[in-house]
Picture 1 (cartoon, one colour):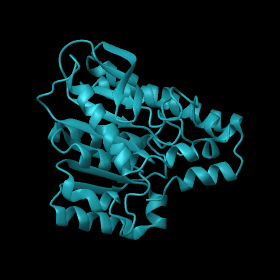
Picture 2: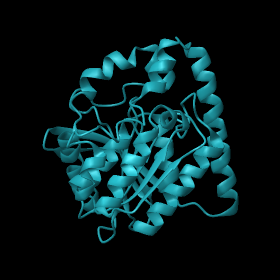
Picture 3: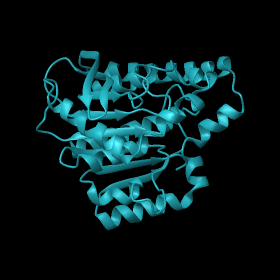
Length: 291
């Protein structure tokens, strides 16, 4: 469960924007094709989407909100990866909203940089993203994310498109993986499902803020989807997280998937369509059971 190590490797290898963009473009086409195939066999709701802002304890959060045009639906707090809010993440949210969820994609860097900062992962690498976001990311500890999650859950519950009588889900990618667990710990009365996809830093030794050490505060079902290369580097992390979940009596599916770090994200060079499809189906199963 490494912390963005694979992305750092790509940056050090000086992947060109042209090559990176070609890979991301091919993955996006594949993802769109899969979505089109799904629409051929079932009706998809008309979606409403908008950029939104709302107050948090630390300022004004900006986010992307998408939901079916009609009815009330379970809310989802969506934590992006290190490249943050961008079209790839909006597309992932649109796909999930098409399943009947009201999805709020947060900008985790709002304290320092409101709005989209990188168009895609190619731009992130090309523009020195690691150096740029480093100081912003350093501020995102368990307490800060907990405050943000509480504000996001409260905002969702006040939206006409959200069924506040049902639980909220949360999902996070790469650096957002621990954010999903911290969110569930911060708002246990509302967040009933949490999913981490190739999350970095889920096990941080004896640190009391390590996600695996906060499971006593969680009332949610968990999906912990681990990348193959992350597991190879830290094989004990899976076992330690599973042990902590067992002690805390938190239902958790913990699995190593056939994909490297970033495999679920369409604009990542590691995108693996088959494994990403399985991860998405497992997310839907989690939400169906818990929300």
